[in-house]
Length: 318
Image (cartoon, rainbow, N blue to C red; front, top):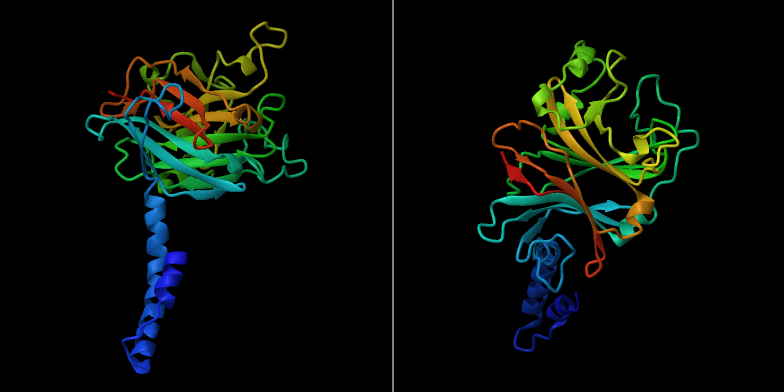
């Protein structure tokens, strides 16, 4: 801004007072147009970032280019989507994710009193008191994902004793916002579409809808049906040596015979430990042709940028 102030206030000894007034008026008219361009230029400097060996987190590919989407306010900071593309052609996506700066984990909305544990019977993933943000996707990301939804759940959600603690949900949808918003109980076929599962060979190994059929399928409005990883530590029986409290987990979502989203769920407390982990995603026997299926999800902290990243990684074209 100091450069612009200098431009605005620069002396004009070679012009008359009338010309000076005209120039001043034109400059003042120009400044409101110049300011957003200056800020846009500053923002665009960070749209493309190259991962180098001196500034990357474990699992980054040396030379890969990270493209960010436009940021939105989260907590006291900001969140934005990003895609990592192949360093050779810069068109092939390798990873798609959400980046939260350190301040984004501060000043988040607090739990609504009595919000947890009040879901309607059978709704095992009610998101009560949640904050929703739809993060703009990076340009030319090259994946099948059309929508990234960030949910902050200050009171968690059902089932009680498992996911009813403060955490984030990161939904990566392969359907449009309009299609997502059409998943509502007022649809006469809501129950039928919820119960219409994807073909068995499209279901990743070890994932299942809870509770199992023939119990009513728990469909969440504007989300669909959630498929849980039966090997997740938080889902093991009480007293089991492999049982552990929920810190992070992975879920798929389906609707009307198709998988429509992939969803890492991560607690705020776990993110604050600044993890750098890559967790494999169990494969399916078959994939939809032409899609980029993630083989893992990553939860990382970039100390140089003070940025948490939650991503679908190892994208492989099927």
